[in-house]
Length: 175
Image (cartoon, rainbow, N blue to C red; front, side, top):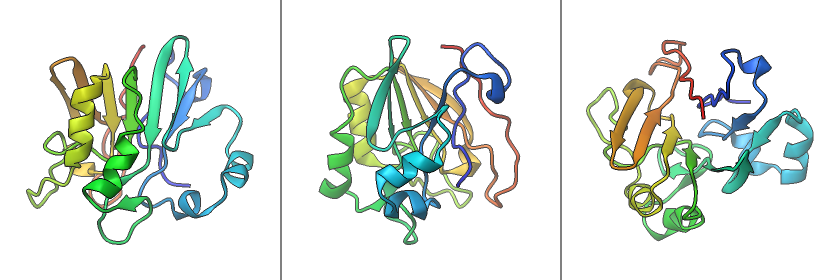
């Protein structure tokens, strides 16, 4: 199983004691892309909520999660930019409060160590339509941090650096 890309901690500082844990797979999680969803449900602990182009309401807060990222390096959950990836973003409900995606939207906390912006343009357009309170993602390890634009707080919660070593602290949100 890949690293959790973000931690949503509700009224607790220790993940183990958190009432709800939300998991979105990422580009290294080939097993999750290639395996039947029934088998995946059997291996994930019951206290973990796995979102794959799906959502859940928790205490009236609507979450939506997706592992999809623009095509790069033949990784898991890659989709071609344009119509192929857009169909995933079109699934995001307009009343989403917290959007969790593996990858970032284009131009927001998506800059690589080489100075290249690698986020998804189609995702950015959908976020502007949906206007979630939070958009949480990872994928681009070196652009960890947060940024608010309009009604949405964008959070790159990647805890790893570009060498896959623990560098950043988990971001804690009290919702």
